[in-house]
Amino acid sequence: MADYGSLVEGTDPRLSVEIIDPAGGAAGTTALRPVLLLHGFASSAQLNWHDSGWITALTAAGRRIITVDLPGHGGSAAPEDLDSYRPSRIRADLLQVLQDAGVSPLADDDPASGLDVVGYSLGSRLAWEFGATQPELVHRMVLGGPGSGDPLADFDLDAAREAAAGGAPVADPRTAELLRMAQLVPQNNLAALFRMIEAIKEEPFSPAAAVPSMPLLLVAGERDDLAATAPKLAALSGQAELVSLPARTHTNAITSRAFKNAAVEFLAGE
Image 1 (cartoon, rainbow, N blue to C red):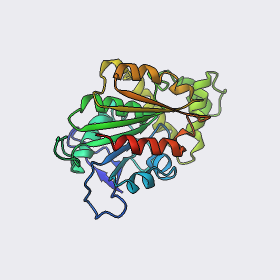
Image 2 (cartoon, rainbow, N blue to C red):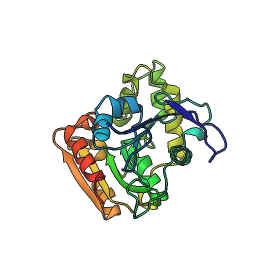
Image 3 (spheres, rainbow, N blue to C red):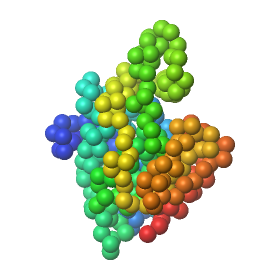
Image 4 (tube, one colour):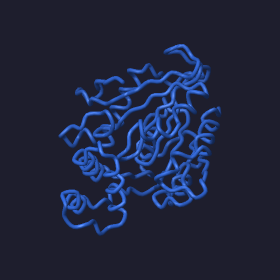
């Protein structure tokens, strides 16, 4: 693991970053572009990508991996300031991470140039915006559990804070489910997660404001209510493939072998 300072913003975001070379490849060398993995809310690179087999699947396909724990998640710092959690700030910090990792702009004659991105849930929202604002870097993207809405912007923060402090249960079912997910991981820092929600409320997801220009693969469990609006994202893109995972939910779609296989195949495209 490494901590990457941010020259873009001028302060150190203390993000936990891991760079993993492809299976059988020499350290730091690969003939294929790297893949940036962005995890979901209240999760981490360990939970979303290592434990569910994504790292193994992608490195076996010859891909170099860059994982980042979002602020307040996993091994990253949990700053007190709200600005560190804003999606716009996170995108700037991601750009710095990629520059530090040696990612170069896309070049037609260089299959190792640029990068691909795989995001899940909140990571899909961040990937959508990053791809839209950095088309010179991003070749293809896989977005898991995506939707055109913003459940974190709609989150009942006051009720969740009261419930977390031992008060009345949360009445809003979606807020209650997100809070339950956040509390499932014992090491989660609820105060930091609440700061992230507060920051997202100030910068809610507006997918039509900036649309990625590269090919997209949108993948969701057929029982994932949070991703029910994925077709709206596909329509905005105009060059997105949709894959539905039978019987999967927002919680367990990430572990699907079919999801991983579809992603590896899609990212191998020109």
